[in-house]
Amino acid sequence: MRVLFFMGVYLPRPGGVPRNTHTLVSALRNTGVDVEVLSPHEEGDQGLSLPYPVYRYPRWPVKRFFTRAYLLWLLRIWSQKPFDLIHCHGIDPAAYASSFFKVLKGVPYIVTPRRTNLFKEERHLLHRYRNRRARRGLLKADRVTALSSEIQRIVESAGVKSGRIVRIPHGIDPPPFGSVRPKERTRPYVLALGRLVAFKGFDCLIRAFSHLADRRREIDLVIVGDGPKYGELKEVARESGFLDRVHLVGRKEGEEKLAWYRGARAFILPSYPGNEGFPNVLLEAMAAGLPIVATRVSGAEDVVIHGKTGYLVPPHDSNALADAIDLILTQKGVISPSAISTLLEKYRLDAIVDRYRELYGQVIREYT
Image (cartoon, rainbow, N blue to C red; front, side, top):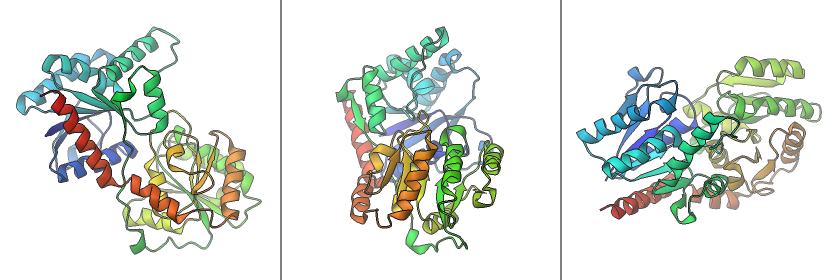
């Protein structure tokens, strides 16, 4: 079986979508599925070596004007080595262009929406046109895989029949936390991890920490990650009056990242709604045995069991976030090891790969 992954972003671009998709591609190829990737050019991709073919198309400034160009790329790849299925990670341009390729060549496609803001509020004609493209990409798909219950609700509300929606979240190979020493620091800390971009909500987290800091004089806040909001977040920390206890330590990988997880008292996900689909950092934090405080965004409500593995709070509410962090630090033992073990079993990478293989085979058989 040959599957083409059609991406809107990919390695070496940082972030969860490229990293998680690379993990899935590698795992599928290890089971015998011939997966190749079509993605836009990314800065630094010329020096990147991956153990599978990646076709790079130009990153055009306005996607809606280049549908024919995407079709030409699909035709070019298909003419060299026909693929049985397209797996679109994102709706526009991937699913929209694939809906026309399906008409041209009879190749089925499935689509995995990567976030919840699939449709724009129709304030003008361009928003209406964009929404039409998104609906076509969804409604013409042979299956839609929903990373979370919230994405499933949004897809159903767009008119996709429930029988064509399959819930498949991200998977995780539990990292080897047992072989890694916890990060050694003189002061305990709570941890957040992610790209320093607006929708991750780190500004709200720093404000929440400022509400908490006088109550919890022994605790620091550590944020692991880099990104364009670094300077703004440092300024928020400075204005809070607790710059000496808010630590932006940069991007960490491998054992160094695992060490930060292992040394933490709790993990915090302060994201805002819209751009999250299924935050894999929650699975990593659970695998590390950490209690979690998360905002109610896509994926978090599926992973965090309120009162058992952590607490859920409304997005944008720094007071509620501060209170939940205080509570989880006070109630040591709130986390249930058996609940974590049961939950992580559902998200094992090998089980997720098996579900995708089964889905691919089912869709391909419908076209043969």
